[in-house]
Length: 474
Image (tube, rainbow, N blue to C red; front, side, top):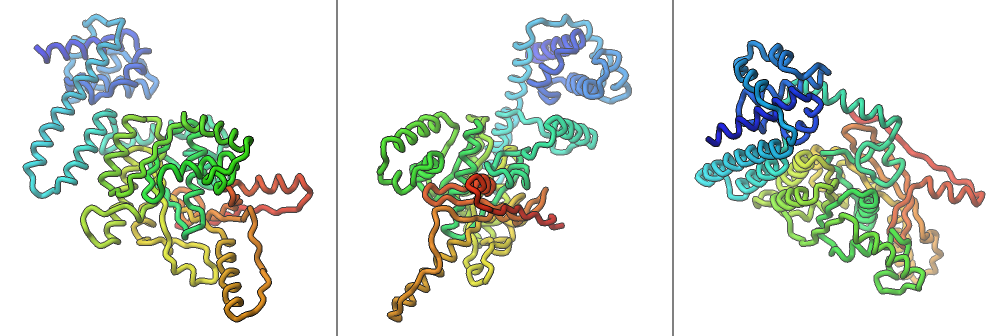
């Protein structure tokens, strides 16, 4: 009886498409061939999609012609569909097909749970991760096939090229970094990308990623941050300082005049309506991250980027050698970015060995446990501020002179704004090179170098600006 019921519903939906082909796209946006219970119905609905893609009429004659000779095709089944009365109110029928499909998937998952618990070759954490992943896909009814035929790939690629053509000569295809020249070189952070932002301490990597987060939530996109080092209130203080240009130090101690206080209140009012979710729980391993992020993505589909601050603070799950654990974390982040179809940005520390070099600009080999990170990352950015090292050298010279009882004249003066470099050490789909930014220390904010050029030029001061681009490594 139940089987007859669902067969009748599926026939009615397919009959409606034959009667009114223009309704195919609305129906196809809600259900896929896999959602049909009856195999011949799956085949007919899939063929309707092929006809639509080929800009051919969706009618019974063309469907019959395309399916003639196929083993699963039953011409009598097609006649049954054509003879079924079409329906006007489709929503309830389509919803029922979807609902039954999800229940079948859940039933299969229930059987898998039973089988998995009997199997002693996998740990409980591994089983939970696999089951959570499958449950996440059921909740989204993700119809990504494990294998894709060349026809499907070619058509989707042509659709992508057509969409890009419509956009014209745009530089931004992925998530906005907030910096013009960085967008120009990377076209933004793409869906499925693992982006590593690395630097030595005090270079401003957290400030840099917070600036990126601010740009995205201002654009209306959701961002989730896993802060393993800094409480959420400290992150928000930094973001408010960068957004309002109020000194971070004054903001921390509440030393604000009326005008600054008003700016902070306005910014806070704006920020509270943004989709910014912060997890500052501290201890986190790759299994917990996957579970949390899948749940968040299901609850908040508007989330378009995840940030981890920082990678080396993530815990291992197996007590392995730390290099192997980092490899597991790095690979896990990349797979999760692809699964959730969004960029994951992970901050990373660098080895202190680079400080023994004359040129302290970071290289890929300076990444801690660099092998796995370098292999899995799609984009690796290094934050570098030469002034940090000059200030350190100046302090050491001054202390040495004081110990020797000598007078010391400062050769380096601190400035409120410092030149900084974002070095693109790796980019899987684009060039490597250097983008020049300016770091505004009082509010921990990076700004485009061109902005400084324009501001200085209006005052008649000659400033040169250069963006260096190297050829991509093969």
